[in-house]
Length: 220
View 1 (cartoon, one colour):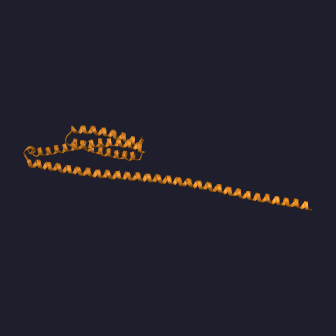
View 2: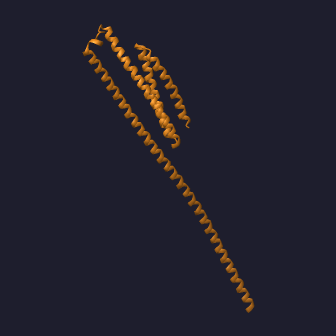
View 3: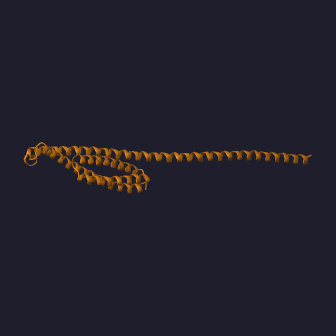
């Protein structure tokens, strides 16, 4: 297991638990206090997404057997984060409704919530536009995550190619060493053969001279 991944995992677990407590606390608040608490939760969710991206990058850089286990954990964390996002969305929707109701009450139109179909229609249209805007943000975020995953895949391919090049370089270096050793061995053998050749020539010359001397003295 990667120590870096474990560090990110601990940070995420603490952050997730803290966000869950804040969501529970925000449900009991209203007005500006609730808005402030929701802003804190959204900032924490951004930090949690950053930790998940870091864990994803770290997991994908590890050997396949470890990577598979860590990616399974990541899926659970992503599901947990999606649940937190849904809870925040529910809080925001409830807060928007409460704000609109307070504004209507302050302007002396408390009965519009039940009596005015026109205002209810406008409220529904506003809610629909808000949902469409939220969907657009979600689509943009999904596109960003897909782009990031593509970038991670490209980095993995480049890392694999780099490893292949390093292996090829090591192999070529070993071949160069073997060629150098073979060249030294052949040079040494050539030198020994050359010495042996001159030694044989010297022996033959000595024998010829000795035979010639023997024949000379015998004939004389």
